[in-house]
Length: 181
Image (cartoon, rainbow, N blue to C red; front, side, top):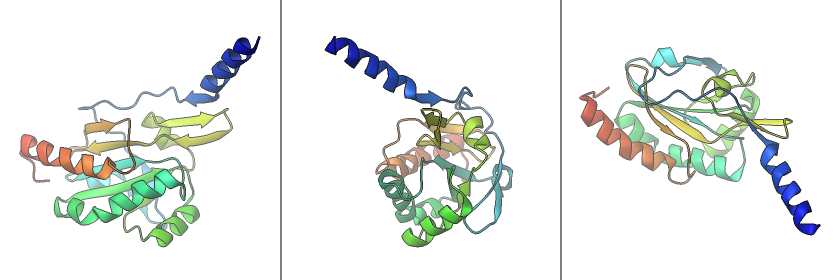
């Protein structure tokens, strides 16, 4: 009887996480455009960065341990990204007010985009929920090339290592494409 309860509980927990139906854009595909506001109320679209490399990283929630670690790692490596002409954009479902407080507290000098309608997270295939009640973006990153195509999609992101992995891959990709972008 106890084993049956454990199996039922296990099944219920596995079903508690509902993944969005949309598939993520694959490497080589055009990255979906979007228009979102940042923590300062400024609008950003992917198309405005055409001709540049873009790191579009999705994260679940402002002020949580993993998200803070990831954001601060991008902050600490930002000069390296800027030296390569790369734009870093963070995206979560939090609103601009939450992003403003998060950015101010941790001195985050790059845009944090507010996907309050969940549309961008869904389009990129990262929207998920817990028990259908609490929606959030899974921690995934897209490296987008200067032509607006997905160069790399990072699914299993380690918050401490994400920025370093993207920087490492950028060196090889930029050389392979011949694009100083």
